[in-house]
Length: 306
Image 1: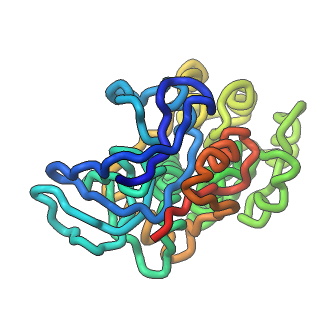
Image 2 (image 1 turned 90 degrees about the vertical axis):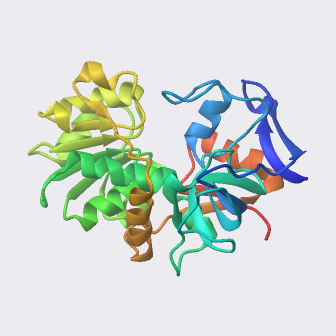
């Protein structure tokens, strides 16, 4: 038996539990990995609350929390090529990352580059890959100005890093408490709150060429007014309303090629994850609360003992 942190029904934190369960069996094209680290993301508590991604099957309760993980291949399923037992890997999980063992589909898995820790690799499939996909989607030329909302979070920090690497000028909105973090990444900080648009216009008097939103809601509605070309308005935080604003959701590739690309950028230091807190598996609930409050700096990671 192995430990896993699950939700037993849809709801809030009260439906979570640490349980013993048999490790899953790898099917065709799948890797069973001994998890060493799992990234914590807002989508984790949204899934617990009943959200399902487009095309995703209903939850098979109890369901293990977590969407991304890194670890060591313990077993390979039929037809797997390019991976072997003992390889250090990371990817998007089929059976949840908050566990001692999980399955990765080889279609969304990659080898962990040397120089990157398991904790760092575990943050790449969601936060870094979302940033990579969105910046590619915007396709802004060097010298253009990009506005990033929620720039102090896990995805936002990677957007800023990648945009700066590509020669963009970046303005990042975040709370006043995240000012130092946003500026350390190379962005001009604009504090969230009332009169946000006026502060953005003051920071970018010539306007902005693109918006990468990670907040959604009224924040997204407000910043939509600062970009003239709404095809350059994308969001990972307000997918339900972005269409009415003339923008679009971040188009996620979710493939091994993207993970290989972000791994290379991480190894080069461009997308080096900013991990601000780590928790053991038996404190997974605390890790998720840290993200669920909406105030976490950078990335929160659950580390699983070797």
